[in-house]
View (cartoon, helix red, strand yellow):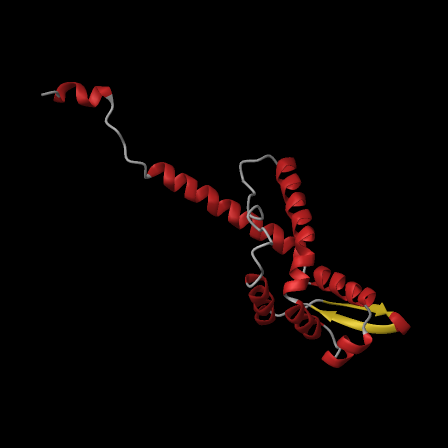
Length: 158
């Protein structure tokens, strides 16, 4: 797994390690339990038929929306986030709670986002949702009840 070493206050070195899939599940569980005030409805609105620049603009907008939702994510899932920080670093829970400043914590979280390539994950998931929406639209379009045309009914009048 990938890792990155960063330096925080007092020249302390912290190694950030990519989360294994099982630990990522815990993070996803925390996200699932978010309050209703965090609106994720447009996160998967990428449509494959858009040209490349439109897709990039949409993915950038999704990223911005994710960043805007970050305070609610942090507030509602603080304990899970601290558990994820512990799982991603060589720091103890006590060390995180008592010796890591908010600025150092942000450096750690930034490194976690980088090591786990969160932007690529968000982009991929957005593309998946776009494909699912497109497929559902296509399926809905092909399952509409057909109405007989005038040509079909012309010879069947009573």
